[in-house]
Image (cartoon, rainbow, N blue to C red; front, side, top):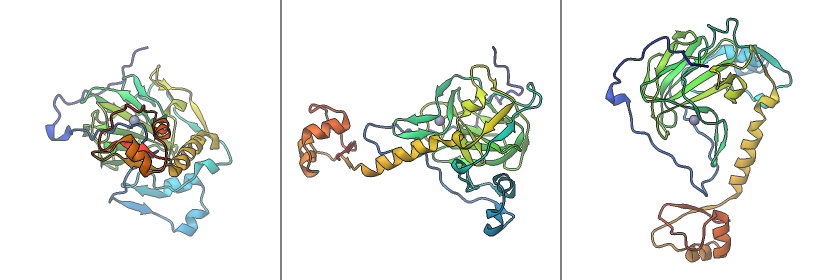
Length: 296
Ligand SMILES: [Zn+2]
């Protein structure tokens, strides 16, 4: 199957100031579990109802009642508590209602990656390649964050939102209406990124779901017309909590110049053997300053 979803040609050149060096992040052995964190910034926030009214509304009504151009997940819903199954309609016309965002191979899956949870799927691309909205919707957020780089969130009427990150250039603004296949930006390597790729997320009422539940990446198409969503869609959040709890009990020490394994072991009241085992290193491992070692 071929991927021919580029209805628009990207511009030939990208202003160089928009192609930023990435703040590379390489998870290391011994890094504590870190959740992908995204800052809260200034932006427009419209909430039509007060907290008491919101508490009586269904999740879907809350989704519709909040419009926030700053916070990635402003809805405050815990989907693990969802006690029914929602069948979402993903398309009516399979040839027009879905567009693959970019045709590169999947290079990283949704799930644990090193000591972080990866809440999206990475797709290979070259800086400057077109990135297209997967479904029809309204651009809610289009801005820069240190972790996502230049990113766009498109809100779709069925409760899904799609997020496109590490762009070299944003080509839409908050409030823009887009159709499936409309250009939202150009692929890049901005934010915390290792090489040009698209970090693609799908969220339901604010919380990420595995994009593979929605999309058959090998066929560049939706898996099915209807998508069932229930609490088990969000079961992965228990894995995240477990890793967080584990990490919370671990202590780490950052190696300083002149440190040796025995010095560090003595300082933390453990044997060199245990220190090596905890960090999967040998007694001959050369320690460089700045490296984090687990010490309990
Ligand atoms: Zn990613």
